[in-house]
Amino acid sequence: MRRPWQKPTDSVRIYDDAVLRAPARTVTDFGNELQRLIERLLRVQKRHHAVGVAASQIGEPWDVFVINGGEIRRGGKPEVYINARIVDENGHAIDEEGCLSFPGVFVPIKRSSHVALAALDQDGNGFEREATGLLARAYSHETDHLQGRLIIDRIGPTARERVIAHMRKHARKAVG
Image 1 (cartoon, rainbow, N blue to C red):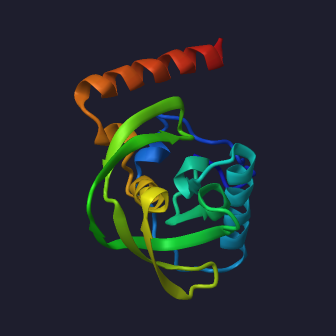
Image 2 (image 1 turned 90 degrees about the vertical axis):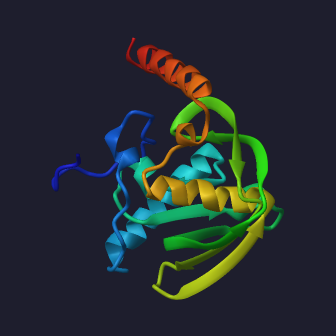
């Protein structure tokens, strides 16, 4: 846990970090601290060429994520989602999914193929989005993060054990 005198970092938290399992806190203050968090998320997203990044992935407990539309469709711009909730979903699709918090891991995940999302922007204004395909998957993935759910929670026990073994090996390499 970061102490008040410690500067926040842009490091991506890796599986087994407790912050990834904690449900996010609702954002009520749209001031400078939130704007700095959004800037950090956008930096991390750009650095990793990520489709999306949730605040918990950089160690922050807030209900905020960013989606980079440019990684999904040409001409798309990064978008900020605060206190986002999936309000409708239907259909199903299985596709490989990765996550910055699980480097090198790609697993087939079943998700809704159509998602409707309600959220606030960085100024506190409400909006809704509907999406299919990769964008619907990204909305679901990031809202999972903010509820403390991870991709390993959506796969079977055998695949989960393989992913956990991979992450343990990854952790040993990082330390050694």
